[in-house]
Image 1 (cartoon, rainbow, N blue to C red):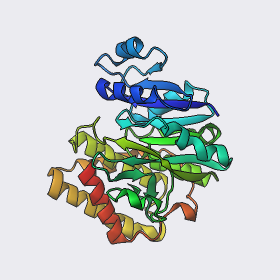
Image 2 (image 1 turned 180 degrees about the vertical axis):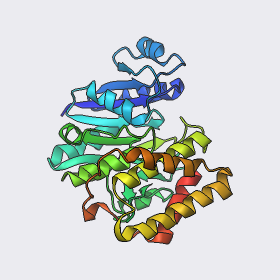
Image 3 (image 1 turned 90 degrees about the vertical axis):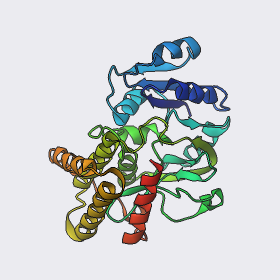
Length: 314
């Protein structure tokens, strides 16, 4: 099966160069497509000089993660689409091991890579969602020996490094460009599961994810975009309807208050949620994901702990 590796970038040439160097020695044949969100550090010129075989999709301006990934995927024809952040360093057998589940089972629509933090702990092994469809990096902060843990449930890969079967990707239309950043990979995983595709994990596909190397850590813009994504997807999935509403409201209230009082001392996260909620009003409701895509064992208190862990690492 042919592979397109799509790398969305916005500046950060040194990270991109290192990522491309790692891809150049992969054991599995593939095509690299770099989707450039209007970089101003000479990324395109340097790519043409140092990596002429890699394709460049120039978006002209910073259109966000989803738009860049979708443009990169459209530019390719590979039977497998691999999304890869430029701050991921992968060993030579990474791609070979990542796509293996797709070659074994036609029902698998996506595969999660095992991403490791520089300190050797798990950064994420795919993503999971709780009963109010809040998403979290799966197994974050746990030792590598826990990679085979059955819980929390795997819903799909992290957008930082994951493989997708192109027919599955095309069937649901790729990533939702209604958000600029954050949560798109979780939404994509949920829509794939709702469409009947299964997700697999590839424990042998291990790579180092530097994490937040391409973003300003906890900047007001970052927190606004994270809040926007949460408000947007809450409305698209009807999270505030039915018996899930009290837990969802309590979780978001605590998350916003904690962000304002303990971390940022502003209301960027709240403003983002309100803005995302309003934008989603004009969008159709997404299908409810199947029960086996939601980890109902994640309690209210556990969801708060998981969210706090995300704040500490982003």
